Length: 306
Image (cartoon, rainbow, N blue to C red; front, side):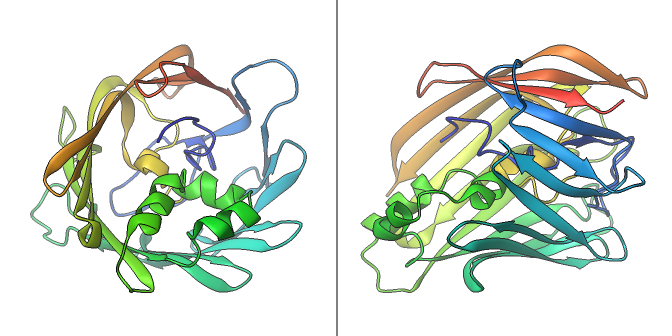
């Protein structure tokens, strides 16, 4: 599930640091920006180069391995309007809808055909410390798109991988689903950890349910509350929700239950090396992930703009 950090994030997709991130705003507003990212080694040409506007504020493009790029467009209020990858054979895009600078919906298309829709539902009780944060997300997957033949015929989906993560577990569920529905539905529900902060900044747990398959996947986290997540505040860093927790995770425990029976357990350990300081907060220069699936560490090296 977490074989590489590269498909995990736009979590790297727009890797930045914030002086603050209000719970009622999810906008790209960096004071400390990523310049380059390497995967597995910090020598040689970077795997990702970040291109900003003339004022150095808005991310315009991420160039990947000098082969292709993701291009960003913005609304007047600095929220992201679209992310587009123009490939050799087809075009991928993600459109964002917002209310009061909070994401309402993400719609993924290929050549204009809708393949995936996420609809966000927020905690709307103003007396709740977690007001404005995500309560649950409805997810709708186009079953035809996840058919194994389609994925094998179009092997590269870099924008999808970057924003939403590895598609394989969805494709496996689609392949084993006997229902005749054209859409596979799931829902993610969130629990927040107040920690030492006044507001609920970190995700303690999220649970993803696939009703037609009686499948429930639960992710549970622990954190290092003294250090800060460079991906925090990025609504399009959706894979593994990496844009939605303030501090750096130390552990993640993943359980998959099918028809009431525990079928799979994965434990992930995170560690960090090198520090980059910004406004008395420290961010990692190297992010190391070790999953019990492979017991092979993966590395991400981050160079921040000065």
